[in-house]
Amino acid sequence: MAINNVKGTHDIIADEARSFDYVENVSGQIASMFAFQPVRPPVLEHSELFIRGVGEGSDVVRKEMYTFDDKGGRSLTLRPEFTAGIIRLIIQNKLLATNELPLKFYYCGPVFRYERPQLGRYRQFNQFGVESVGHNSPYADVEVIALAYTILQSLGLENVTIKINTLGDETSRNNYRAALKDYFKDKIANMCGDCQTRYEVNPLRILDCKVPEDQEIVKHAPKMSQYISLESQKRFIKVLDALREMEIPYEVDDTLVRGLDYYSETVYEFHYVSAKGNDYGAVGGGGHYDKLVHELGGPDLPGTGFSFGVERLVSVLSDDGLLNNKQELDAYVMPIGEEAQEHALNVADELRLLGYKVDICFDNVKLANMFKRAEKKNAKLALIIGEDEIKNNKVIIKDMETKEQTSVDFDALGDTCDELFNKKECCGGKRECCEGDECECKKGE
Image 1 (tube, rainbow, N blue to C red):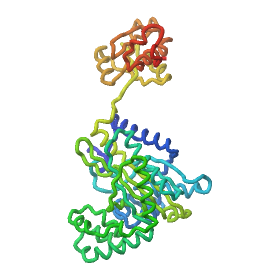
Image 2: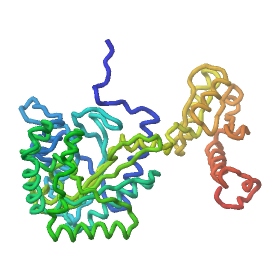
Image 3: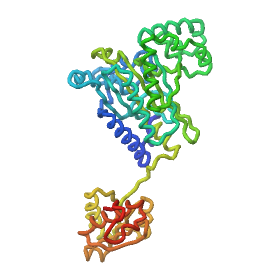
Image 4: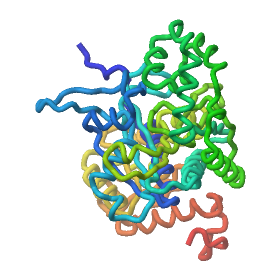
């Protein structure tokens, strides 16, 4: 009987894996431009970290965590999100005491949630995100929103909808919770079981219910904006004004609460509908948090951050035709006969040391079949080694685009390939200006 992958997980292979690399590399490069540094917290954490950090009232803690006792009887959890682990890392390594604030980190890796697999979302999925910890300025929130928006733009996504709201300070949220409990008290008995639990633990979570009948009731609930303190209102206006000044589009959504209990003040989500009409909902989101660092044993410092679901971003980019994830080779080495295969290894090794992407055909097949393989692998050059080439220490180089071929000494192989690839880059590959001794546009130098 075959053993298949676990439900809710998926194998990321070849072209798709290159797509993941692309999204993660672009995101990491842009985060570095914003002076964020990489961190890699462990996948396994003590369960208490997420119970205290994410909140017992969140669906993540109540229903979605992969939690188990290890052989020492310790309760461990596969991380369902990164933020709590990042804060634990900061506190444990005393980074707040030894570094200038804010601390700015970015991360990428798998997270685990036991939930219904859906479009672009699995039980094991990947997140890229950032955390900026130690500064209470509203412009720290703006900076991370701008960073996220820059990533999405750089990936080619246009017409991203940024939904934004404020949850206010602690006083604002306490007043709002009281108003919600009063509103729902005569209705909660007819609502779903999750809402009934949320009513007791954290009534703000009711606003995020996905049951259609309950959503109708939620529509008429009091609005958060009615209970926001004057100080929080001023903070939120500064955020919106700064986004407008930076020409970052947004729409205020006063029902947005996010799914984790540690959020306060500004929260936001990035929504996108692909060219194929697939609505992926939120491809990412984040917000400000006031008490998380203190709750996990650190000083009373705020933070702000966001995360993207990498699977969702890859799916959206694929739908919109924005991925060029096919394998491309600089050269495909084609030895004719078994004796030539050892020479093919030397040729490939020479070019790989120069930084070229090279593959070798080790099958004893006809030359025509090798050319078909070279085309399938999107090789730019085919390098042919036969009996005569072995005898004369030469290699035949064929340009797969122009079909031109030449025989060169093995010792000149690297220089010849450099020259050919420089010509390919010159003038968009037209190459007319590279004839003769001078390159008129100088790009081939």
